[in-house]
Image (cartoon, rainbow, N blue to C red; front, side, top):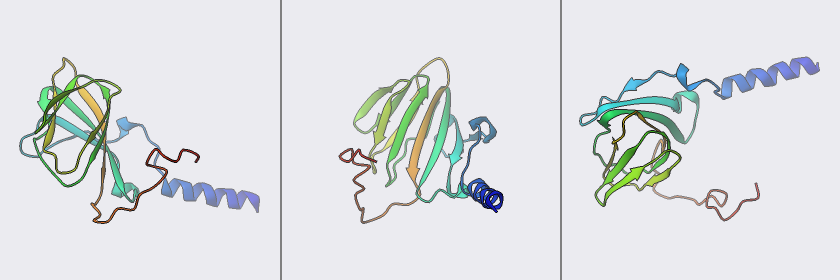
Length: 146
């Protein structure tokens, strides 16, 4: 009986989680007008059952960039490798490995590779923008006991 329960739990976990090497996820061209040498891997998204956010990995070739664009949701960035610039209406800021970057909603921006090897970064975005936001105390940095 116990073995049957364990098999059921393992099967449920297999169906509700994803655990793969990023190399198994296709690297696709960013085909939006204004992009040059930009590629994306959709690491986790709606098709994986994620209810709120997508996690993407961008690879920007030397001299490449994402399109200069604007939208009504934020970007949460973590730089893995390479050297880049975040370009916004407020100017440029350098992107280095291990940097954490927050891009505000409705801020025109793009990411430019200014280095001599690919610029690689993780980017999380929400699936939809909610008009009324309920604050999560565990995400605010004020509650750290979970």
